[in-house]
Length: 307
Ligand code: PAY
Ligand code: ZN
Image 1 (cartoon, rainbow, N blue to C red):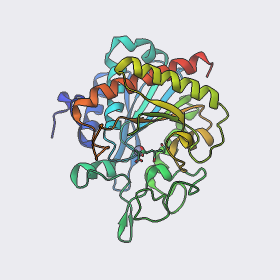
Image 2: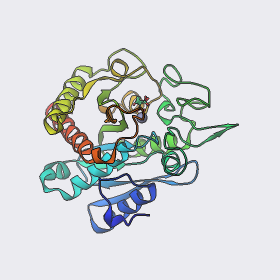
Image 3: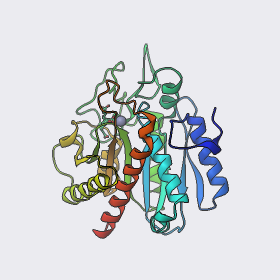
Image 4: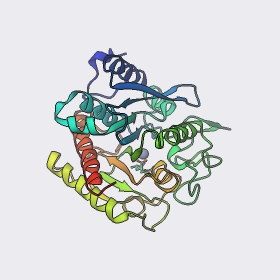
């Protein structure tokens, strides 16, 4: 395995490497602490970091790796941590906001994509001869309504009930416990692929209460990406941009927890490839840069609108 000191954004890293990199960072930076949601189905800890320079700052919460095969998402999450911690350029964002980042909220699945099946998406819970719940269909808000399946053999199996999965329960508890105390006003989920900046809802065509703000902010974030890398990202509600789906974490964060600024990013996939989840490693850095730039725009624009 790779020495954590050689961590970079030129390749994809195993779960163990990501976790030990985060732990080492936390040891050497007093403003960074390790956070842990608790163990997954297979007993692997769901780890993250919290960057807090001022306890009274509002917090941006970022989750990635809910879908195992979308490797670029955890890369972007670790990139964000590193930039905020080490790049003076983003000083105001690191000082005026706190950041909680969990790069791999589905550790069992992520590990499995490195060891056995690169295209695995779900967690690894066992159902007879099938395995895995799509954790982004398992949240208890309009659960099992649309764009999901109740067949455990399917890639979009929503589980046996809303919140049935231990990983879902861990994330819910963590965000619920920290929402007030850390003043979480922004919730970002990172996925791939499709180059989209999506906001609630996925389960209905009906507009979220602050749809117009989310749309305007999302479009500004897409414009930032255009400036950074020339790439085209589109913004809109999940329902209108990609496909209807229910039980996603972001719908829950917005609909149940009332976190106002809530986005799901679909990052890049490779052009002209049948394996659109396998983004070549030489595109990791640029994809991370554009995602981070877009997130900073979201933070800035939401602030201007008084969120
Ligand atoms: O709430 O983020 C959401 C739902 C949308 C994503 C999903 O969970 O299905 C979109 C897909 C994803 O990133 O998982 C898009 C990719 C391309 C897919 O697998 O269809
Ligand atoms: Zn995904």
